Image (cartoon, rainbow, N blue to C red; front, top):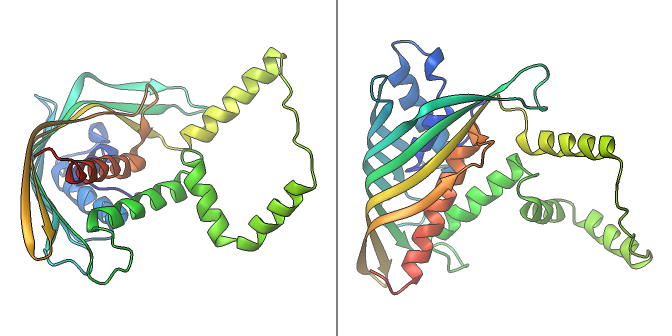
Length: 280
């Protein structure tokens, strides 16, 4: 179920689509289409990508001219634009994970050693039609968080609980009233190793989900970032170099369809942080 993702970010998803070894000569077209489709899922904006090209000799996928349209109420046509993006596979690009979430099947973890954006341009502005005073970056980040929590509630318990409370306010009130009439339960310490192992397996299944393909990225880097901040019809341009976004996915990786949202989330959060800082 291919639903998700994005990054300038579109690129991200390419990973999710990384069933390279199963693909044929149409792989590049497939990667390109998945980047566009999945970028749209998280952003709900039009995504464009000129080309995607994978080399089986170098293990590098090169993406050219990615752009993401701005949200309604913005003066600028684009929110993000990346001209060149490279994804380098690790020397050992795949491994198998025995996952309790898939009956009698194994999960393939695709390891991307480095995801590098040669240059990224972003535009920030307060949305005209919004009473919240939030910027387009903040509005989109809220949307991405909501979609991640909706699709992966086990990984976002707090946001999921808030969404549930909004969706069913009467149930939240009932639970609150019941809590007033009950004493807190003391947690019991489980010593039975068989039960402990069973509980751990259930938790692992809950967190890993049903994905047959998962992705791990060791390093995400933006070589050059240009952030244009528009306020009161004035534009301030901030430039940064060598932005490190860290790694994505632990030893078990992230569900391939989740990776796009996670990357977009971290990029937006970094842009917001840089905008509000004195650095330039």
